[in-house]
Image 1 (cartoon, rainbow, N blue to C red):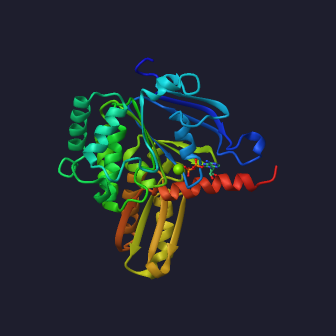
Image 2: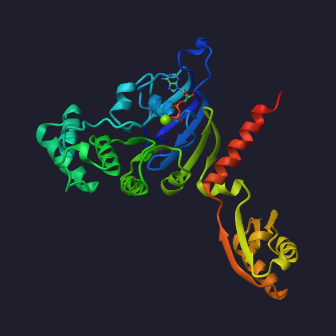
Image 3: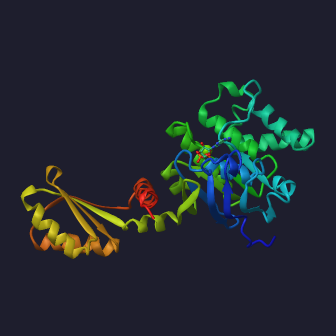
Length: 328
Ligand SMILES: Nc1ncnc2c1ncn2[C@@H]1O[C@H](COP(=O)(O)OP(=O)(O)O)[C@@H](O)[C@H]1O
Ligand SMILES: [Mg+2]
Protein backbone atom coordinates (compact mmCIF):
# COMPACT_ATOMS: atom_id res chain seq x y z
CA UNK A 1 0.00 0.00 0.00
CA UNK A 2 1.44 3.38 -1.05
CA UNK A 3 1.52 6.16 1.56
CA UNK A 4 -1.05 8.16 -0.35
CA UNK A 5 -3.54 5.28 -0.77
CA UNK A 6 -6.71 5.69 1.22
CA UNK A 7 -6.57 4.07 4.67
CA UNK A 8 -10.23 3.08 4.42
CA UNK A 9 -12.32 2.46 1.32
CA UNK A 10 -15.97 1.51 1.57
CA UNK A 11 -18.09 1.06 -1.52
CA UNK A 12 -21.78 0.30 -1.63
CA UNK A 13 -21.62 -1.45 1.74
CA UNK A 14 -24.80 -3.35 2.64
CA UNK A 15 -25.84 -5.26 5.70
CA UNK A 16 -29.19 -6.62 6.79
CA UNK A 17 -29.17 -8.38 10.16
CA UNK A 18 -30.49 -11.92 9.93
CA UNK A 19 -29.76 -12.02 6.18
CA UNK A 20 -31.63 -10.45 3.30
CA UNK A 21 -34.28 -13.17 3.37
CA UNK A 22 -35.22 -12.18 6.92
CA UNK A 23 -36.87 -9.23 5.18
CA UNK A 24 -35.66 -6.73 7.75
CA UNK A 25 -34.72 -3.15 7.13
CA UNK A 26 -31.09 -2.87 6.06
CA UNK A 27 -28.73 -1.46 8.71
CA UNK A 28 -26.42 -0.38 5.87
CA UNK A 29 -28.01 0.42 2.54
CA UNK A 30 -25.10 1.14 0.20
CA UNK A 31 -22.66 3.13 2.28
CA UNK A 32 -19.68 4.82 0.58
CA UNK A 33 -16.67 6.21 2.38
CA UNK A 34 -13.05 7.05 1.55
CA UNK A 35 -10.62 8.11 4.24
CA UNK A 36 -7.15 9.41 3.30
CA UNK A 37 -4.28 8.25 5.54
CA UNK A 38 -3.33 10.38 8.53
CA UNK A 39 -6.69 12.10 8.77
CA UNK A 40 -9.61 12.04 11.18
CA UNK A 41 -12.94 11.26 9.59
CA UNK A 42 -16.20 11.52 11.49
CA UNK A 43 -19.29 9.47 10.75
CA UNK A 44 -22.07 11.53 12.19
CA UNK A 45 -25.56 10.19 12.64
CA UNK A 46 -28.42 9.59 15.03
CA UNK A 47 -29.03 6.39 16.98
CA UNK A 48 -29.72 3.50 14.63
CA UNK A 49 -28.10 5.18 11.59
CA UNK A 50 -25.71 2.23 11.07
CA UNK A 51 -22.52 3.64 12.57
CA UNK A 52 -21.63 0.70 14.81
CA UNK A 53 -22.53 -1.78 12.07
CA UNK A 54 -20.08 -0.03 9.76
CA UNK A 55 -17.29 0.01 12.36
CA UNK A 56 -17.82 -3.67 13.22
CA UNK A 57 -17.56 -4.64 9.55
CA UNK A 58 -14.39 -2.60 9.11
CA UNK A 59 -12.93 -4.16 12.26
CA UNK A 60 -13.72 -7.67 10.86
CA UNK A 61 -16.14 -8.44 13.69
CA UNK A 62 -19.14 -8.69 11.39
CA UNK A 63 -19.57 -9.81 7.77
CA UNK A 64 -21.34 -7.57 5.29
CA UNK A 65 -23.61 -8.95 2.60
CA UNK A 66 -22.92 -6.54 -0.23
CA UNK A 67 -20.37 -4.02 -1.48
CA UNK A 68 -16.77 -3.97 -0.38
CA UNK A 69 -14.57 -2.65 2.40
CA UNK A 70 -10.82 -2.23 2.57
CA UNK A 71 -8.73 -1.19 5.54
CA UNK A 72 -5.01 -0.34 5.30
CA UNK A 73 -5.04 -1.77 1.78
CA UNK A 74 -6.64 -5.13 2.69
CA UNK A 75 -10.10 -6.41 1.92
CA UNK A 76 -11.84 -7.12 5.23
CA UNK A 77 -13.43 -10.38 4.04
CA UNK A 78 -10.46 -11.81 2.16
CA UNK A 79 -7.66 -10.74 4.51
CA UNK A 80 -9.17 -10.27 7.97
CA UNK A 81 -5.92 -11.17 9.77
CA UNK A 82 -3.94 -8.54 7.88
CA UNK A 83 -6.60 -6.01 8.77
CA UNK A 84 -6.67 -7.02 12.46
CA UNK A 85 -2.92 -6.53 12.78
CA UNK A 86 -3.24 -2.94 11.67
CA UNK A 87 -6.23 -1.65 13.57
CA UNK A 88 -7.28 -0.57 17.03
CA UNK A 89 -10.87 -0.40 18.16
CA UNK A 90 -12.52 1.56 20.89
CA UNK A 91 -15.97 0.04 21.10
CA UNK A 92 -19.13 1.72 22.27
CA UNK A 93 -18.98 -0.39 25.42
CA UNK A 94 -15.78 -0.60 27.39
CA UNK A 95 -13.83 -3.82 27.53
CA UNK A 96 -11.66 -3.20 30.56
CA UNK A 97 -11.80 -5.20 33.79
CA UNK A 98 -13.11 -3.18 36.75
CA UNK A 99 -11.31 -5.17 39.42
CA UNK A 100 -7.89 -4.69 37.89
CA UNK A 101 -5.94 -1.46 37.99
CA UNK A 102 -5.47 0.66 34.88
CA UNK A 103 -1.88 -0.51 34.61
CA UNK A 104 -2.84 -4.19 35.00
CA UNK A 105 -5.47 -3.83 32.30
CA UNK A 106 -2.98 -2.33 29.86
CA UNK A 107 -0.37 -4.97 30.64
CA UNK A 108 -2.97 -7.67 30.10
CA UNK A 109 -3.89 -6.21 26.71
CA UNK A 110 -0.21 -6.10 25.82
CA UNK A 111 0.22 -9.78 26.74
CA UNK A 112 -2.88 -10.68 24.74
CA UNK A 113 -1.25 -8.99 21.78
CA UNK A 114 1.90 -11.05 22.25
CA UNK A 115 4.13 -8.34 23.67
CA UNK A 116 6.54 -9.92 26.17
CA UNK A 117 6.07 -9.07 29.86
CA UNK A 118 8.71 -6.38 29.89
CA UNK A 119 7.53 -4.70 26.71
CA UNK A 120 3.92 -4.86 27.85
CA UNK A 121 4.87 -3.13 31.12
CA UNK A 122 6.88 -0.44 29.31
CA UNK A 123 4.07 0.21 26.86
CA UNK A 124 1.56 0.43 29.74
CA UNK A 125 3.73 3.05 31.47
CA UNK A 126 4.12 5.03 28.29
CA UNK A 127 0.36 5.04 27.59
CA UNK A 128 -0.64 5.85 31.17
CA UNK A 129 1.60 8.88 31.02
CA UNK A 130 0.40 9.92 27.62
CA UNK A 131 -3.23 9.94 28.71
CA UNK A 132 -2.61 11.62 32.04
CA UNK A 133 -3.31 8.44 34.01
CA UNK A 134 0.15 7.93 35.50
CA UNK A 135 -1.03 9.12 38.93
CA UNK A 136 -4.01 6.75 39.00
CA UNK A 137 -2.58 3.80 37.10
CA UNK A 138 -2.51 1.59 40.19
CA UNK A 139 -6.09 2.23 41.26
CA UNK A 140 -8.82 -0.27 40.41
CA UNK A 141 -10.68 0.80 37.29
CA UNK A 142 -13.96 0.52 39.21
CA UNK A 143 -12.96 3.77 40.96
CA UNK A 144 -12.23 5.72 37.76
CA UNK A 145 -14.38 8.60 36.54
CA UNK A 146 -16.09 8.24 33.15
CA UNK A 147 -13.47 10.38 31.43
CA UNK A 148 -10.59 8.39 32.98
CA UNK A 149 -12.15 5.10 31.89
CA UNK A 150 -12.57 6.27 28.36
CA UNK A 151 -8.96 7.42 28.28
CA UNK A 152 -7.94 4.00 29.55
CA UNK A 153 -10.00 2.37 26.78
CA UNK A 154 -8.24 4.62 24.31
CA UNK A 155 -4.85 3.62 25.73
CA UNK A 156 -5.83 -0.06 25.45
CA UNK A 157 -6.77 0.37 21.79
CA UNK A 158 -3.30 1.81 21.13
CA UNK A 159 -1.25 -0.99 22.68
CA UNK A 160 -0.11 -2.31 19.32
CA UNK A 161 0.35 1.08 17.56
CA UNK A 162 -2.40 0.65 15.00
CA UNK A 163 -2.33 2.32 11.59
CA UNK A 164 -6.08 2.79 11.65
CA UNK A 165 -8.03 3.46 14.82
CA UNK A 166 -11.81 3.11 15.11
CA UNK A 167 -13.53 5.09 17.83
CA UNK A 168 -17.20 4.23 18.18
CA UNK A 169 -18.93 7.06 20.02
CA UNK A 170 -15.91 7.73 22.23
CA UNK A 171 -17.63 10.30 24.45
CA UNK A 172 -21.22 9.09 24.65
CA UNK A 173 -22.36 9.18 28.26
CA UNK A 174 -19.52 11.38 29.50
CA UNK A 175 -19.98 14.68 31.29
CA UNK A 176 -18.55 17.81 29.61
CA UNK A 177 -15.29 17.53 31.48
CA UNK A 178 -14.79 13.88 30.53
CA UNK A 179 -15.61 14.75 26.96
CA UNK A 180 -12.99 17.49 26.85
CA UNK A 181 -10.39 15.10 28.31
CA UNK A 182 -11.12 12.51 25.65
CA UNK A 183 -11.01 15.12 22.90
CA UNK A 184 -7.58 16.20 24.04
CA UNK A 185 -6.41 12.59 24.01
CA UNK A 186 -7.76 11.99 20.52
CA UNK A 187 -6.11 15.17 19.25
CA UNK A 188 -2.78 14.02 20.63
CA UNK A 189 -2.96 10.91 18.46
CA UNK A 190 -3.27 12.71 15.21
CA UNK A 191 0.03 13.82 13.85
CA UNK A 192 1.47 10.37 14.56
CA UNK A 193 0.26 9.56 11.05
CA UNK A 194 -2.55 7.45 12.41
CA UNK A 195 -5.86 7.41 10.58
CA UNK A 196 -8.89 7.75 12.83
CA UNK A 197 -12.48 6.89 11.98
CA UNK A 198 -14.74 8.26 14.65
CA UNK A 199 -18.48 7.83 14.99
CA UNK A 200 -20.51 10.32 16.90
CA UNK A 201 -23.97 11.67 17.55
CA UNK A 202 -22.43 14.95 18.65
CA UNK A 203 -22.15 17.52 15.97
CA UNK A 204 -19.77 19.55 18.03
CA UNK A 205 -17.52 16.53 18.42
CA UNK A 206 -17.20 16.09 14.66
CA UNK A 207 -16.49 19.80 14.33
CA UNK A 208 -13.83 19.64 17.06
CA UNK A 209 -11.95 16.58 15.91
CA UNK A 210 -12.52 15.72 12.29
CA UNK A 211 -10.97 16.88 9.02
CA UNK A 212 -13.98 15.58 7.16
CA UNK A 213 -17.42 14.47 8.16
CA UNK A 214 -19.99 12.26 6.54
CA UNK A 215 -23.53 12.45 7.76
CA UNK A 216 -25.21 9.04 7.86
CA UNK A 217 -28.89 8.31 8.14
CA UNK A 218 -30.69 5.00 7.54
CA UNK A 219 -27.45 3.28 6.49
CA UNK A 220 -26.52 5.76 3.81
CA UNK A 221 -24.34 8.85 3.52
CA UNK A 222 -26.62 11.84 3.11
CA UNK A 223 -23.88 14.46 2.98
CA UNK A 224 -20.14 14.61 3.16
CA UNK A 225 -17.40 17.20 3.21
CA UNK A 226 -15.48 19.41 5.60
CA UNK A 227 -17.56 20.90 8.39
CA UNK A 228 -17.24 24.28 6.66
CA UNK A 229 -18.58 22.81 3.42
CA UNK A 230 -21.51 21.27 5.24
CA UNK A 231 -22.28 24.56 6.88
CA UNK A 232 -22.07 26.35 3.55
CA UNK A 233 -24.63 23.93 2.13
CA UNK A 234 -27.31 25.23 4.39
CA UNK A 235 -26.88 28.83 3.34
CA UNK A 236 -23.62 29.92 4.86
CA UNK A 237 -23.24 32.29 7.75
CA UNK A 238 -25.72 34.35 9.68
CA UNK A 239 -25.71 37.89 10.95
CA UNK A 240 -27.74 38.50 14.10
CA UNK A 241 -28.62 42.11 14.89
CA UNK A 242 -30.43 43.52 17.90
CA UNK A 243 -31.74 47.07 17.43
CA UNK A 244 -32.13 49.66 20.12
CA UNK A 245 -35.55 50.73 18.81
CA UNK A 246 -38.11 48.07 17.79
CA UNK A 247 -39.96 50.69 15.72
CA UNK A 248 -37.12 50.67 13.17
CA UNK A 249 -37.21 46.90 12.67
CA UNK A 250 -39.00 46.78 9.32
CA UNK A 251 -36.96 49.56 7.78
CA UNK A 252 -33.72 48.06 9.06
CA UNK A 253 -34.61 44.57 7.82
CA UNK A 254 -35.10 45.72 4.25
CA UNK A 255 -31.92 47.84 4.35
CA UNK A 256 -29.92 44.88 5.62
CA UNK A 257 -31.45 42.49 3.12
CA UNK A 258 -30.18 44.66 0.27
CA UNK A 259 -26.85 45.73 1.77
CA UNK A 260 -25.80 42.23 2.90
CA UNK A 261 -27.27 40.52 -0.19
CA UNK A 262 -28.99 38.23 2.24
CA UNK A 263 -30.56 34.99 1.10
CA UNK A 264 -33.25 35.47 3.72
CA UNK A 265 -34.06 37.92 6.50
CA UNK A 266 -36.13 37.13 9.59
CA UNK A 267 -37.29 39.45 12.33
CA UNK A 268 -38.58 39.09 15.86
CA UNK A 269 -40.11 42.32 17.26
CA UNK A 270 -40.18 41.00 20.83
CA UNK A 271 -36.41 40.62 20.85
CA UNK A 272 -35.84 43.62 18.49
CA UNK A 273 -33.93 41.05 16.48
CA UNK A 274 -33.05 40.64 12.79
CA UNK A 275 -31.38 37.50 11.45
CA UNK A 276 -29.92 37.47 7.92
CA UNK A 277 -28.41 34.51 6.06
CA UNK A 278 -25.42 35.63 4.04
CA UNK A 279 -22.73 34.09 1.87
CA UNK A 280 -19.84 36.57 1.80
CA UNK A 281 -19.57 36.98 5.57
CA UNK A 282 -17.11 39.85 5.96
CA UNK A 283 -18.50 41.99 3.12
CA UNK A 284 -22.03 41.40 4.41
CA UNK A 285 -21.08 42.49 7.90
CA UNK A 286 -19.27 45.62 6.69
CA UNK A 287 -22.12 46.64 4.39
CA UNK A 288 -24.69 46.04 7.13
CA UNK A 289 -22.85 48.29 9.56
CA UNK A 290 -22.49 50.99 6.88
CA UNK A 291 -26.14 50.86 5.85
CA UNK A 292 -27.40 51.10 9.43
CA UNK A 293 -25.02 53.95 10.14
CA UNK A 294 -26.06 55.88 7.03
CA UNK A 295 -29.74 55.50 7.96
CA UNK A 296 -29.08 56.56 11.55
CA UNK A 297 -30.34 53.25 12.95
CA UNK A 298 -28.67 52.19 16.18
CA UNK A 299 -27.80 48.57 16.86
CA UNK A 300 -27.31 47.23 20.35
CA UNK A 301 -25.55 44.12 19.15
CA UNK A 302 -24.29 42.73 15.85
CA UNK A 303 -22.86 39.22 15.63
CA UNK A 304 -21.59 37.09 12.78
CA UNK A 305 -21.94 33.39 13.36
CA UNK A 306 -21.55 30.10 11.54
CA UNK A 307 -24.51 27.74 11.66
CA UNK A 308 -24.04 24.97 14.20
CA UNK A 309 -23.70 21.41 12.98
CA UNK A 310 -27.04 20.74 14.68
CA UNK A 311 -28.66 23.08 12.20
CA UNK A 312 -26.78 21.39 9.37
CA UNK A 313 -27.89 17.97 10.52
CA UNK A 314 -31.54 18.89 10.96
CA UNK A 315 -31.52 20.42 7.53
CA UNK A 316 -29.90 17.42 5.84
CA UNK A 317 -31.97 14.72 7.51
CA UNK A 318 -35.13 16.70 6.85
CA UNK A 319 -34.19 16.57 3.14
CA UNK A 320 -33.82 12.79 3.12
CA UNK A 321 -37.04 12.25 5.04
CA UNK A 322 -38.88 14.43 2.53
CA UNK A 323 -37.40 12.35 -0.32
CA UNK A 324 -38.47 9.09 1.27
CA UNK A 325 -41.97 10.29 1.87
CA UNK A 326 -42.43 11.48 -1.70
CA UNK A 327 -44.26 8.72 -3.60
CA UNK A 328 -42.59 7.75 -6.89
N1 LIG B 1 -27.32 -7.38 16.38
C1 LIG B 1 -28.34 -6.80 15.74
N2 LIG B 1 -29.42 -7.53 15.33
C2 LIG B 1 -30.43 -6.95 14.66
N3 LIG B 1 -30.49 -5.65 14.35
C3 LIG B 1 -29.46 -4.87 14.72
C4 LIG B 1 -28.33 -5.40 15.43
N4 LIG B 1 -27.46 -4.39 15.66
C5 LIG B 1 -28.00 -3.28 15.13
N5 LIG B 1 -29.21 -3.56 14.56
C6 LIG B 1 -30.08 -2.59 13.84
O1 LIG B 1 -29.35 -2.05 12.77
C7 LIG B 1 -29.57 -0.65 12.64
C8 LIG B 1 -28.25 0.10 12.77
O2 LIG B 1 -27.75 -0.08 14.07
P1 LIG B 1 -26.33 0.45 14.53
O3 LIG B 1 -25.31 0.12 13.51
O4 LIG B 1 -26.10 -0.04 15.90
O5 LIG B 1 -26.58 2.03 14.53
P2 LIG B 1 -25.81 3.19 15.34
O6 LIG B 1 -24.51 2.66 15.81
O7 LIG B 1 -25.67 4.28 14.32
O8 LIG B 1 -26.71 3.60 16.45
C9 LIG B 1 -30.58 -0.29 13.70
O9 LIG B 1 -31.85 -0.30 13.11
C10 LIG B 1 -30.42 -1.41 14.72
O10 LIG B 1 -31.64 -1.63 15.40
MG1 LIG C 1 -23.68 2.63 17.69
